[in-house]
Length: 375
Length: 255
Image 1 (cartoon, rainbow over the protein chains, first blue to last red):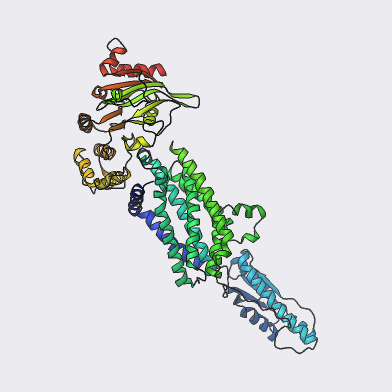
Image 2: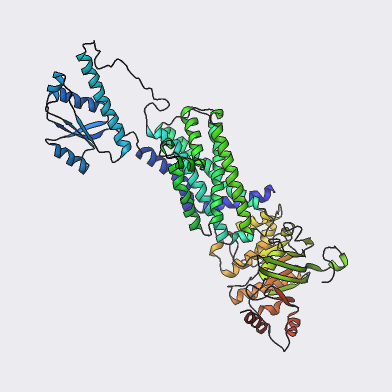
């Protein structure tokens, strides 16, 4: 391997990259667009669902209950309706996402110490959104219960405060903002898309255009060809990482609690693992279009099973096992730990070791196939 | 051809740039090249002719160090391609059938890239200028290669293959899809290079071009059917046939 030949390859690759404007724009534009789209649009922490109120009781007690529901920040009263059917219809149409139905006997039963029921209709077609709302509503009910029970037992009560107060302290992301959780994930997703698609396409292009055939009859070695093709994309990966981290910090106030050095170091392993995957795809594909499709084939399970969108804890056994084969799974755990929790290298060493292992496996298998393909 | 090719005998080796002895290449049950031997002298324009699937491409790939033969030996420019397939690459130039340069790079960038790949250090500028001049690359150095005409592209590709002054150059169907004027210019360049001592090994489908060869080898179904000057090859098939007749006859015998 000579530095001279390698640097010629890298030089050529950079010129081609610069000249391929659409791809260049994609590589640098995608991270920013994805960051903004995911950061702003994805809200797992849905608040302020529009709610209809069907209050047959029309008492101080019933108004108080509605206020308590609103006070949770999960509901906003947007309609008052005069029949149960009307409430249901509004949910059907999507005018409101929830409706509370308070029976006429509500206040009377409460005063007499009889059990009473309030119905909350929630549009649960989107489970994530509705679960928060349901939990909040149940909490309101419980705290009312405790208040009533303590009143009945004539124990001294301190406002609505229950005796046992479970105080939850959300760590690392106290405001429970989705963006803070999502941004480190976006870095992983963007890096894996770019590395896989761009490398597989750029290697296949050399074969499709016949330039590889010319190249392999020169003294340049296969190792030099591969490293020369890949090195510029490692640089692109680091530009993307830096862009998303910086924008995420300033737009979404994503903290950086851990060491930047660990983030950048582990990212190298992740990039190499994905380049290995890209190279692998390039050995399967004959045309650039096939390389593109091949990348998407890996891309979807990568996003779905890695824990980027859905927690891996909730997945069936088999899905979790498959997820273990994706570098993104480990990289996400590392990034979230280091960026959000300030984990040190020792804390994420097991995941980093797995990344290294996958990088070695993917790369050596691909290099072997790449060599074979050249003959 | 009887001499041992493995011994670097200066007396026999003098003037002989390529020495192929009993090369055979099998792919599974198919024998692509079957016991082929020939030699090429320095400065010759040597043709390898034959119908499709006759083993031409396989033979060239072996000589370029891209394929290992199943048996036999071959020396190219003083290097044993079986023992040292990578070593031969810096001693040869190769121009592939499909245009193999980068279409999105300029004339100068392509030349500069190949100069780098061939390990030229300080002299690259001078060699790039030489290639543009000698190959009649009638285009601005800053022109994107994808926009060049077929003839200019072809001469530029040849220029890239000659930057490192290789003693042996392989041209695989170099004039396919090039207009007659450009073909004529190309052959003039080839003859000039051969006069300068560069050995040119050319495959072609155009039988009128075959008359340009100093010597040629006729391959069919992996076997060497004849080798010698165009005249000798014609005579070996007897009855005053033209090379084109022989070519067609061989092709028909296969099917």
